[in-house]
Image (cartoon, rainbow over all chains, first blue to last red; front, side, top):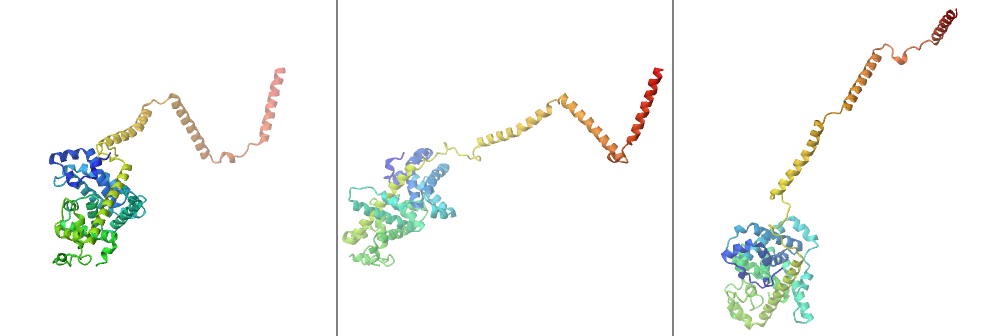
Length: 200
Length: 194
């Protein structure tokens, strides 16, 4: 169902030629197969709600399909899709319904499950546990970031987008993107290594 | 310790983390830039990292941590995605959207038309069917009996004394008349004998 090379795709390599881009968007099945993991992963990390991520992933592709004629060639397909997904996530987060259900949702992402998904490398059990603990800590730290910082952090370190691409997705100036990213990293760094703040 | 770092003009604004170590911005820049896109002022920060074991260790640790974060999040999301139903394509989608599906309008209109037509057709059939003779005669007989009943009612109402309250006939009158009749009949029989 999902091509294996999706996860290792650098975002820039997903940019297609002008002629091929239109063709690929018309072939929605291929677009879904190629970009669904990425869109879903981003929405899941952003919203931390399985059902919401699932619904908005579907909505993202439906919107893309509906608006495919308006797709300009100023960015890659993946950037365009992530931009749609981000807008949908923002709208979803703004609604009162989300705020209410966020507290009682049984389908919220469990940080322990994410930590348990750490790939088993050839290392000791202790190293594996440490890695799981680190993942747990980062997930918890990301939850404490502001919405904008979280978005930028996830786009950079989960989706591996470069700064100009993040600026294109968020519509923010490069300097603002960098500023938010560095602040987010500082929060993560402080949680990761509390001694780093002792020198302040 | 790299004195150049402390001598940067905007170093105070960058809030150095520890004496002579990388600033928050430099740290962020080093972390957020990958190998294919070197940092803008990477030479300075990278030179510091090469000479400062503490910053180097922290940078390496954080990079590994962020890598594991990405791997774990990706693995988790992929696992969740396998449980998720496939995105339904619009062309194959069968959603009940009457506004955008004219076929549904046609079906709904046909159903309403049939629902309205059926009772009307039944009524029309009833109206067109000739009334049975038996039914007609029954109805005329009923009308006659009704008229007779009405006449009786009118008669009773017009009477000065209601029938239940009228005086009873004298029973003796009946007896005398009866004996007279007997006498008359006896006389007749005598005459026949004579």
